[in-house]
Length: 205
Length: 166
Image (cartoon, rainbow over all chains, first blue to last red; front, side, top):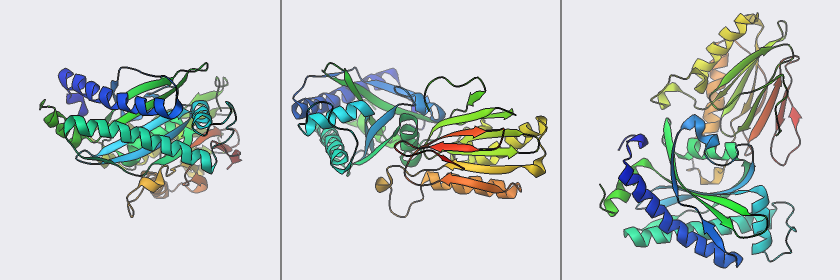
């Protein structure tokens, strides 16, 4: 496959199912970490022009905490975990066992905490994919930035992706049951070449 | 820098451009490794901005959008400014953007797209004979910019930092 627009409906459905398995395991991990109920959306396969990437999810001008990791092994690509800033703070409160509303800034401890959460979630997601597809998938170290959603998403594709025209992501939105309705996004960004490996593994080539 | 834009403000999206005169304010939000190229003729009080995405047309199969690349964006801005009464010989440029986010995940030795965008923008401007008078480029943080055509002033903001004016 040379162009992501060539994906067939059946292949998109299959990718959704693969994402659902990964996101289900990631949600279970997050649920155990935070001792809360986690809801996940039906995964979406979004295909957009590179210049439309800022509008891919949520509001381009929203400040987000984002954890990017490389995916290595039998598939190559990246995973990106995005939380709106307020949800990122609240997640730090939960993971660091602080009273709600305590986390004010993303200092060294908070940054480490979010990276660790990213690590655990991406690890659970990749493990589930490894088991399901009989592959070896390895996560890299995580990297965190707190910046505008538009800048994070564009840079993720520009600096780390190989596609310069149309790009895609496999996206799952999750929400943590709480009065404020905390939400976040988990993005699987396989390289185009790795899509073939996924379809081979699930006999859809 | 959120909320509804003022009446004289124009938002320039990714791989887009705008030009204006007198009290126009050209705004672009959330520059990561992209670069905002801003051209200004102080005499004619005209200015234009392009939000470029890639350093070269050769990187994309679809090169039909001139605002996406410095090599096509700069001639377009110069031409549009001329229709607003600007003299190409009076033009000066400012650059913002080209950040390297998630730098620790880059392969050692590889050149970041942000740096490539900055270098390509400078190169195109040099060949066009347009001096770059100020820059807010590189680093690890994204930027939002407000370009005031009235006096050529550019406000640059990053998350968690004070605004600077270049």
